[in-house]
Length: 258
Image 1 (cartoon, rainbow, N blue to C red):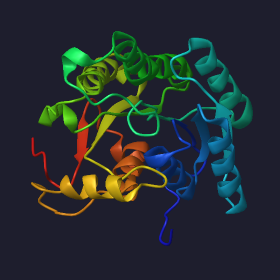
Image 2 (image 1 turned 30 degrees about the horizontal axis):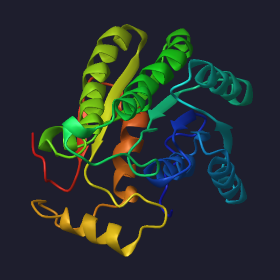
Image 3 (image 1 turned 90 degrees about the vertical axis):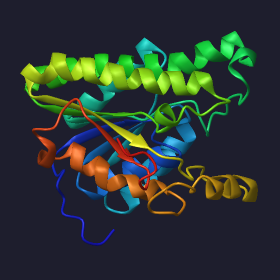
């Protein structure tokens, strides 16, 4: 990207679920701003492919196969990150069951209990486990940026995926609690709230049409792309947001105005 200012030079950023969709764009944006990026991705092949792409472009990245719902897997990822780059300065808890890993879109009473549990394991417990593993490093160095990812579906009350909406609402509460607890350590904890985004790597015509239908009600009436989230991400990851914590930044073209 032209005009990158390298605001994150010398920083190490971990992005969970960084091998696909929005997460992949997060990794590119952070790397282009100078960060060394750890792609913590369940799909090891996708993560390795992105790391190779970034390295070929003169950027710094590694891929670490990671299951965010597994405590041991998360801990190994954190240890590998520190061994590779010496610290972790930025954590983006992006991994979630939504698009890349499909879920049922049915009335709440028809959601299979095992699928409910899986969504909570990844979308909520995975956020908690990731933050729990990284926080001690940031506490010791007396600085850090934790950027959690929620969803504007929380405010719209979208039907047909109650487990997903509930998990993303819980992330907002966890975000605020962690901000209170970690403020004494100069750690900023904030949340990006994306709107409906065309995030699939190779969307079908049907999926594009669905996202086009979702633009209704936006002040800026167009399809949201992963790149639309990078400005907010870099702001929250950089020193420019040093006095911002416990907040949520809605990036949805003005559909939700709080």
